[in-house]
Image (cartoon, rainbow, N blue to C red; front, side, top):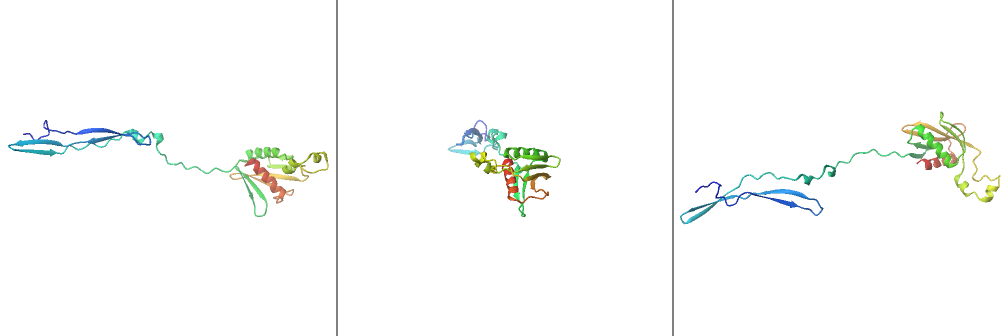
Length: 207
């Protein structure tokens, strides 16, 4: 009899498609190739022999493109971002003088400080943009809010009134933004409590 794998083959290669559906709603189609061997029967006299020959080489496993997901669904490496700079920071030097640092360039910082002074109710006696200087008088916001009816009628009451002393608010360019200081009448950094209070109020408006 013919031993070749021809018409006498009982079982031939068989492929089946299995569909895998994970619980997490991820659908993937996986092709699994199952190949059976080829069996040949020989008969001679009273003996019957069965010879099994292995099937051909299995084809490579095919994975559906859906298994990988859409390009936008794939995990992307994180993109490094630079930390954001605070709009305003307030510091106090060892000598007691305060300094307010703004992230804005001078032109924008000049406008923002001017608007903040208006909101704070500080009278501005003079302003010089070319020199970066505001000449203001201090108004205690707490005293202005707590000022009663009879205090308003008393012309001699100083509660909530602008100070007689003038304070110079100085702006200057300082990389990467602008620096704000309060100077005294001699042009030196003012270390008084009132000067630090002015910087604190500005910080609350500009932060």
